[in-house]
Image 1 (tube, rainbow, N blue to C red):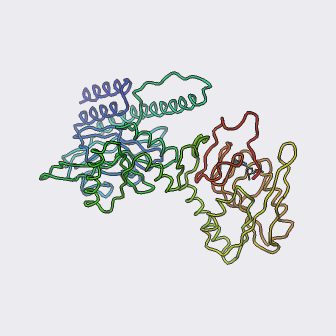
Image 2: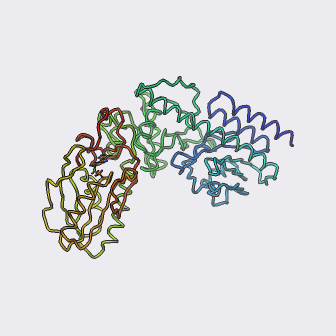
Length: 481
Ligand code: IMP
């Protein structure tokens, strides 16, 4: 038995150190692991970047339908693994921790052993061994699998490093400042796309920070007896929108076939949301969901998206809920400074479950360093004796807010609080009190959702980081609000 583990580990460490792609390496590790512990199948799963779903990166002895049984929610599927524990399931068809028990039954799976892949003590994925016969796993088998997952952890770290290098390489190509040698083509990517258009779509989704899963589910469409003779695997699943997406090519014959499959899928699963998209369709779809551009020119100059439209909306709703509770029974005055606050103010006030009134001020900067503030438009109505909530887009050095708060306090409001969507705390020069904060942002110039650079980008529905190239040399990006 020891001999078995030794030769399996020898093979696994050799393949992990080979030049093959991640999927091939993980398939091979899965095979050696399953054989060494006399399992019928094995798969290696990786947590997606949002750490919500598990994605298969390698497998052995399991059918495609089993592997693509649907999105695997990491917090529901054997959740103890996320805590770093080994999990044993004696009967997969009866255990409530198994997310797709019918499929396990159809596949004839009885026992499952899950072993976490830990990186610095934190789970990044897991290895699962499957058995058709009900069985137990010995101490020696578990100890062998713990060594395998340690090798997997090193391998996955290498893959992550590769991706960082790749990102850096792409950025360096754009900036043309320094040259990084071309990286090998056998990328250690967790997802291998069948078609380049799929990879392009995934990059676009990444840009907008939309979570995606690649081919997580295969739908059987036609059977002969117990055997599936026709199936359909949509390219993507977007959990935030609960939407499956199939990308089309330009070939009419393929489109007709896909349309037929989608019709059949809708008959069998009317609850499934699925769209067939070509490139034009998908930019329009993203625009419809508020993510972005109808034309690519509009997002030129953005290095990356910091907060997607959905993330902002979620946060604004949460802030509005707290404010509504805190101001319950009053009619506060919301005060904003034009123009950066328009998007935030508009969304925030619509989610408040209170009667409110609204007022705006405008200010301009003058003086050598642009940091001396002057009010160019004052409030329309008196705030004396009123509960005032100052609503800000971003607090940076805090100078503007400090000046405006002093001005407002001079009018003796009943109370004065501050709500800012963004807090660039690391740049603070004046200590200003802030009661409600949307997001703490890094020391970088942000644009979109009302915030501008030289008057542009205010209408983007997300918040992004301005590409450093756009900022002219030696120029301070700070613009009047
Ligand atoms: P402060 O007085 O330094 O706190 O600056 C506040 C004002 O500067 C904000 O209301 C914005 O108009 C502008 N500002 C500061 N940082 C940024 C940014 O990253 N993007 C866009 N505007 C900014």
